[in-house]
Length: 288
Ligand code: GUN
Image (cartoon, rainbow, N blue to C red; front, top):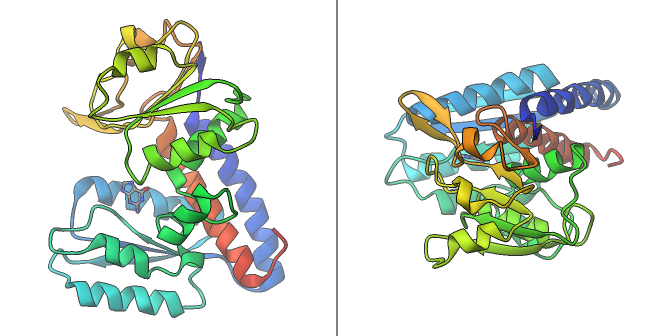
């Protein structure tokens, strides 16, 4: 079994980006900038945001943090987004989700300028993704595809099952896997809570991608011998992070598998850095 080491792969990507950023910043007279907005005090979000800020420091991206109280009003949040949209130091804007009750995250995401939307959540970027056009792509599914590329596990001509249809992971991942290319061109089935024969669907798949948020959801009898299993779930159980897959049992059956933690989580942050550099290059007019 090949362990798909997202932690080490993400480190390589950050090292590559660091060199590229140093060169570009010297040439264009400023570093890329990423604004991260965190509203409220959700403990998991605080950890994510801290990790994002740490990655910025390592890669040489200017981090522009905005930590707002849970009582922040919709209009105050919208005013901040407008300010960051107009700020020339800021190439990327990320609103950490979920936002506290009473705030309309959908409306906020639509107000982020599409060329600064480093999460790839704006309808314009999602639409471009669906049509196979260039644009900023959601970081988690992009991290999944990048990990497959780096381990040379092409999906072309294979069957792929994605479990979970969220806008952040499952749906965009299913779109990416169906696009033309060696790391696309899969026959994709998108499964969800209303899929009646989920186990049979998974059992037929060459690639299983789970993004549902339920510990030990994907079990031994759902995965065929030699399948590639990518676990995108992050669940907290007794203060430990676990994925959606029963790793101990599945690793005997899968030909390659991601661990949790140390799999897709760090890849997501590496892709956020990559998107920030991509947005910056567009803003300074550098060759992509
Ligand atoms: N919360 C959980 N995952 C994500 C993500 O990828 N982006 C943002 N902004 N918030 C999240």
